Amino acid sequence: MTFDYDLFVIGAGSGGLAASKRAASYGAKVAIAEYDLVGGTCVIRGCVPKKLMVYASHFPALFSEASGYGWKVGNAELDWEYFITSIDKEVRRLSQLHINFLEKAGVELFSGRATLLDSHTVEVDGRKVTADKILIAVGGRPIKPDLPGMEYGITSNEIFHLKEQPKHIVILGAGYIGTEFACIMRGLGSEVTQITRGDKILNGFDEDVRTEIEEGMTNHGIRLIKNNVVKTVERVAEGFKLTLSGEDQEPIIADVFLVATGRTPNVDGLGLENAGVDVVASSIEGPGYPTTSAIAVNEYSQTNQPNIFAVGDVTDRINLTPVAIGEGRAFADSEFGNNRREFSHKTVPTAIFSNPEAATVGLTEAEAREKLGDAVTIYRTRFRPMYYTLTGKQEKTMMKLVVDSNTEKVLGAHMVGDSSAEIIQGVAIAVKMGATKKDFDATVGIHPSSAEEFVTMR
Image 1 (tube, rainbow, N blue to C red):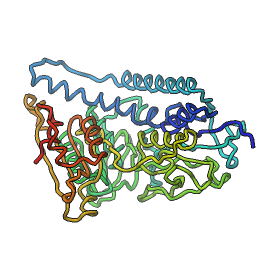
Image 2: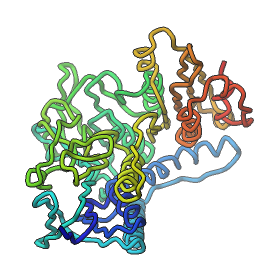
Image 3: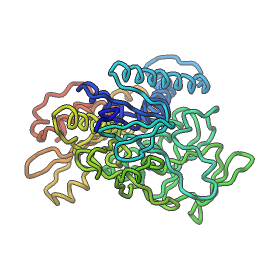
Image 4: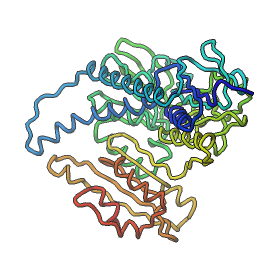
């Protein structure tokens, strides 16, 4: 059978872009469909604009700290409209850049929403095309619980387009998104209240990391309300009134509230049933949430249909941009590059761009003890970085190594403090390669630096 394309990709986000360009480099005839701006969540409403907001949120502290070094800094004021507009311009510039990259790679771009008609046929805005192989890379989207008043809340999609800076923002959720935006908005000068369903933020991370970030957030003026969920939201003259589940918890008034309680794979409307593609339950859970689905794939990102594949957040494996890119490239190498390979989901580093920042790679202490019992040695240090000695601030950095006592292999590395992401990225190479504590000890530290603590801990 003759097909219009060797590969048709649905979704021009990180995974889809990486896969399409890599497949085209092998000589495949490739097309990609996107109904929104090219670039996906990361470029349009995720990593990139968020990191720009993170940078902006650090300036007030820098202005304050400069005085400790003798600098005289005048009154500083944020021009919110200029700030938001500048971020939007950069996002659109990057989106166009990705379009240019597709053109250069010879990938045809379809602007519109793609739907599967069968296992080899896709329809985009009334146009039907066929493909030998189809890759689904449509990512995920924020989801709100079905509770009274949730329609008033914004999600991480809308926070980049607020016309005015919130005076008081309430954030529902204790994961990456909720925690990062709590710190961003506080750094920018808003009053911030974060409501968490459990007794601690960032479930799944090492306990020391969770504790250190919470302490830092509290010290920076963020109000954390734990073990509570929102029961109702009402519109009032001052903004919105949130009634919580705790019997002794007073209602909260805010002018904006962000719902950051979960994301779900974007499977709706794809026509998966037309092609017979199997799905599995996704990981989102909690009061008021419906059961949601993710596309089921094997280690080669292949669905139950041999010619249909899926990568990235739509599969709900590890929902990180570099993972989607890695999965997309591994798919292209396997199917078009004569290099069949899996993408490893083991020892994937990640960062939380909170304040304080944190980053981690490998096993948490709890995970290591679950696997090895008492055969785990923990090395930990906590100190005030040199930078803060003249500022008068008591900011702390925490570093931690989780080591297998039997082999001396470093199973996990965790850090909370300035430049955590930059430092852990390098440490992740050593952990991925199976370095031992002796290898760390034998490495000469760069002095004076915070990073040297990773090779001097005893």
